[in-house]
Image 1: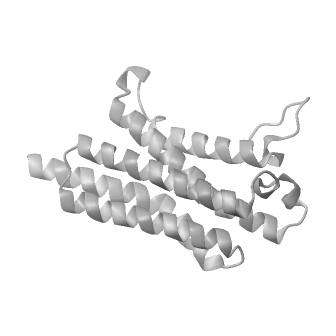
Image 2: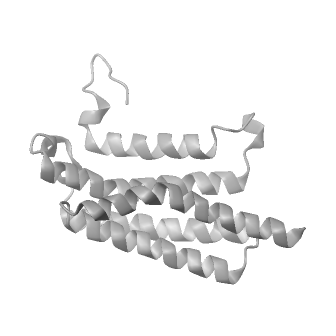
Amino acid sequence: VLPFTRMKRWKNNGIWKICMLAFVWSFFCTLFDLKSWDERTPELMLLLLFRVCFLFMITIPFDNRDAAIDQEYMNRSLLQVWSPEALKNIILLLGSIGAMLLLVYQLQFQLSILFIAVHLLYWCLIVWWSLRALHQPKAPLRFLWLDVQLILQPTFLGIGLLDTYIRST
């Protein structure tokens, strides 16, 4: 992110790099377009937390892939801190937290039960795919699918909100 004179670049620290990437990307996608901080709502904060979980979760397999491809990168990857089994458990934990946040967020807008169920199944698919990509770091199509989720996941939320708006008018 930013180099500091007395610190190594954050990019060289796997944990900081992923936390900053998840938070900054989530912040800009969720709150950056607000005209003032007074427009923050509990729903937006739920969405921000959900996106942080989502981005952190799908970034873990990319970190593992980079470590498998570049041995020099291995020194600053999450694998230096946690075992592959621990990373799997972190993905499952973030997936569970994300599912709860997603459910609470969608219930705030009174979305249809069918849409909520389909979205939660889709979320489970993202978690499952993240686990598969974690264990197969040299499978490029798995990572392409995770990249596409950066677009599809917010689109899916928007479709649900649009459906609610149409039903209410």
